Image (cartoon, rainbow, N blue to C red; front, side, top):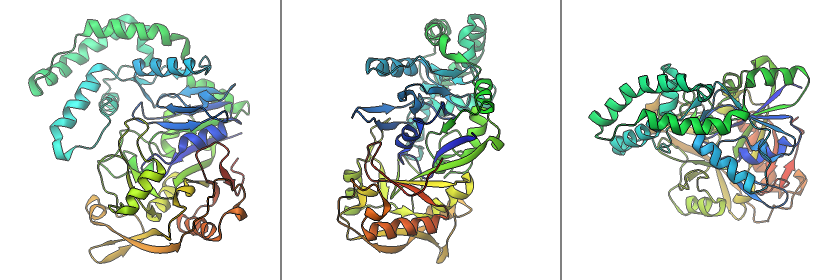
Length: 428
């Protein structure tokens, strides 16, 4: 069976964890292909347990599934071990985890630089989590990265780190007036992590391609989302990797020809965390309604999310960039109780209406939403399992989103639980 990609279509927090968990029951492998512990998924399992997953693939919660951290991920080993310990304490078997030997490591100098640079930027800050993800990717591209496999070779680790810290310590001390980092102490610390992680380190590219050749099911999950993609998102207010479908190929080592299903996760309204443009953002009682009823607080940071109405311009753009075959609309239940539900169908920029994403950062920053209005519904829809059980106005809303985004809506989430979904079409 070809590989399947699950991708966020907005600015993240669309509910990818729930979807990956739902599909994971039919998967042999679930692969995380980019990002680091700057992302998070909340998953509620059938027995009612709630898990906040940050770095490991959500498939780790599915017995028998092999979770894989691909080469495109940046790994903070201390955080990873803490997360694995927490999952084991909750009764989760983590023994099947695979970690790509080629994944890059988040090092202490990355975290230090991330925090100090963000503070230095002041009001121009990007809004990073301060966990060193951006600096790690920057070093990876600059060919100054330290990889997971280096934990298995003390001499290589020592040599690489000493060379890197010659530059990084100069920046920390002379530019930002911070303490230098002791390479010997870091090597000793990271070799201990390496001892614990060694059983999980593997040639994941080879294993995944062999699995696909054998007809096994492989699901690839991204962190963050399309509008945070470093190439295709609202640059520079983006993450440092490629959450889009193309990033799945690079970050897992799987050829594009082996992907035939791309599931786009799209919230029934829109949210984002951190700085950057957000045309449909709300600053009134409706924004407060979505925040409170939707529980819109970051899984990783706890930060309050910015909330706005559904943006069909973003949705259409994400479908095009990712080659989305199916949309999974989440959190439709949050909209219950509203008299009317606006949808952003275009942007007004300097008196001109645009129906597609503006080409320039300047135009996007000046974009004003153009709305169309839909009648709301008051019913509790959490028990609906068929499309015809939804209120007529809720059905019309979903059908309009489908038309605007130019992709079929196959599943509609009506609650946080794994089974709280309306199935319209089979996705796989």
